[in-house]
Amino acid sequence: MCSPVVPDSADSPILVFLEPLGQDIHPASRNAINTALGLAGDTKRELCGVLLTAAFGAGQSAVLERSGLTAVYVFVNSLLGNFVLEEHLEVLLAFVKEKKPGVILFGATPESRALAPALAARLKTGVTADCTKVAFREDGLLLQTRPAFGGDVTAEIITPWARPQIATLRGLAPELPRRGPAGSKIIVNSAKIVNPRAQKAEWLDRVTEAAENAASNVLAIGGGVRRQEDVEIFRRLAGRLKAELMCSRALVERGWFTRQSQIGLSGRGVRAEALLAMGVSGSVQFMAGVMSGRICAVNLDKDAPIMLKADVPIAGDLYAVADALLRCV
Ligand SMILES: Cc1cc2nc3c(=O)[nH]c(=O)nc-3n(C[C@H](O)[C@H](O)[C@H](O)COP(=O)(O)OP(=O)(O)OC[C@H]3O[C@@H](n4cnc5c(N)ncnc54)[C@H](O)[C@@H]3O)c2cc1C
Image (cartoon, rainbow, N blue to C red; front, side, top):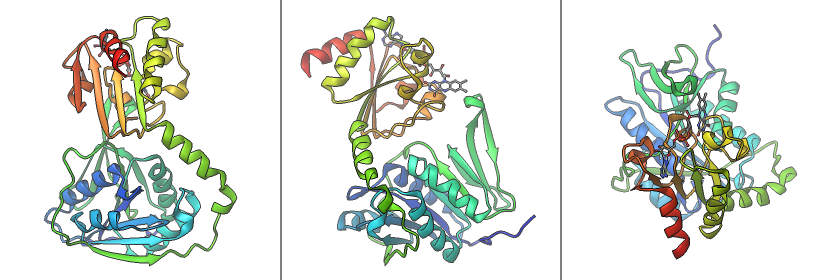
């Protein structure tokens, strides 16, 4: 057993990795803050956040001041505007080595899913991806719960020796972020990047912009669609809604779509502003790919799992709803 790069004690800080989203904080980071607040509970651990950004604005500052975190460390460098793993890793790694957190929580965004394991590898520790729950055990170890084997079992994972204990968290906050009085200390530093690679990746600007625009709304269809020729109806609807048409695995298995269009555990994750799911049951594996802001679901079965998770559940026939929408949008 080798000694950990970052040692831990019962009062080592809990660190939340925060991602900017325009002038706001990404919903997955808000979820991580909420989870960390619950986790810190009665412990003596300091609860802090770290934000890497190209520009730190008043909007983000206002959100973070009321986040409930004790302190938020902001590192600013123009190279941090687009996500390039090497630069983010360099800045985060230096901070973690100095701050020595016992636990680090990330939202399960595509960027954090790349960054968390890269950080873990450099710190010679583990990472539990896509946790649905984290809690301290009585012995102080972090119990990290996540679906395994395609969601058939729930695995409880601990990191007994290596430190810090790192987890990415799936799903959005079950409640609105707790907003306290403006109490969080915001410490802004300029970030030193010794080995910049971003200049080599100027094309990232365009790709990221295109990807974000494309995924701002998603229409997902599933097993409820009866015939392949009906997909055209939903393609038209997606066009009217300015949404990307995606699907559940049921339709990939029927050969109607390629895996590129599949949402979920064995498909793609979607970080859409709004997701309209029609004729999708909302299996654990499908939901594993959903990181959207708002979900509207149309399903004949009012008790289908997705209906219980949707902000707007519509119990009804997807063809009737599609027809009505096509008449008015
Ligand atoms: C290892 C593993 C990985 C997997 N990965 C994924 C993955 O990445 N993504 C994924 O999607 N699945 C994945 N699956 C499969 C997953 O378990 C489900 O089988 C799949 O999600 C089902 O798709 P569905 O909900 O669209 O279809 P169904 O289960 O067939 O559900 C259809 C839904 O449509 C509703 N419906 C039917 N007719 C209508 C109508 N006329 N109007 C309105 N509603 C209607 C039904 O009530 C039902 O809820 C995986 C499975 C395993 C084992």
